[in-house]
Image 1 (cartoon, one colour):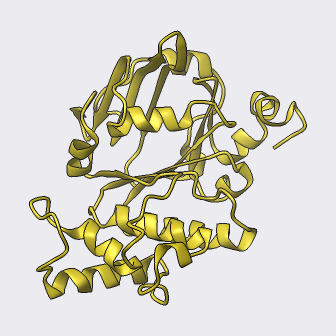
Image 2 (cartoon, one colour):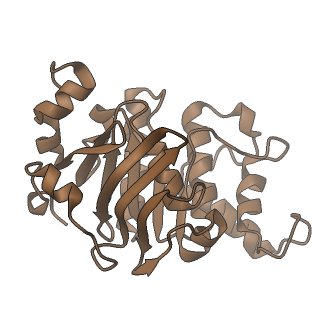
Length: 267
């Protein structure tokens, strides 16, 4: 999908209230709402993700980005609304079910096994469901883990422990572990947090390579400068509601987005 074919940021209100159906994208959220007691974290949010695109999911801190992810991937059940994945209603499905269906995610808070090497961490993610330890892993499983480490740029760190990796290395490990589930779609949460410009470029190149290999990606981040150079189009939320959608250029020049981020000073 070319950037010139993406919808404009105009008429966001009418678009956000429109109904989305199961065939509108590989992943569809229709009227997604999540409440925690009296707090509405996500309010009537609707969007669709096209196959093999990189969609940016953007918003200031506390906008409801991670909560939306959690409702889609099975960590929280939505209070209202519907989630479709590949045409199937998966609303309220467990995280385990979503992984089995081909949707994987990374987390802001890295969760490696601290007592295992980088390679062993990736091997563990490759273990069949019925196994509960790394004992008896076949040689091809180790070879596949090595290949994954090489794909994400960890070939020289495979035998190090996770706590020896820099921040960018930890993200690469998180990506390798997610990729070990052989996903069709990958939700990447805050990949650029705490990274220098050169590290952002490296991770962006890796995500683009994954797309070229057939993956669909949704990338959540509040670092708009890094994200807008990577994505095909963006959805911006604020206070749990849709604020804008469109191409990176449209988002960058949208006054509502500028106001939400920088008090109107520009993005």
